[in-house]
Length: 104
Image (tube, rainbow, N blue to C red; front, side, top):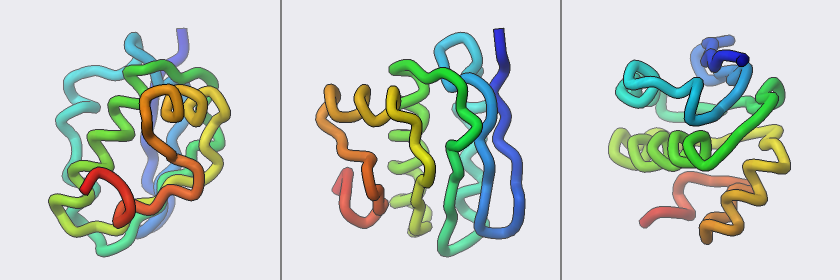
């Protein structure tokens, strides 16, 4: 089983790596939204996500909600196809995501 890791690359860019699943997302991950407060604009690169499930989608949605609370413009790049499919099935459109356009 893989793990999940979010690594800061620079002030406005993070890289998500590993599995974004029920088994890899823990309470520490869920409650660690402080990184969203630190800047006005933030991009999370999902290139290195191997697997994702509905828990992974739920985490992205929580990041979106908190980014709106903190008035941080959040974007995702290189979203894995399985996350895009889960999002569409759930009524969300993550393709070309812009935090000012969803979850009003």
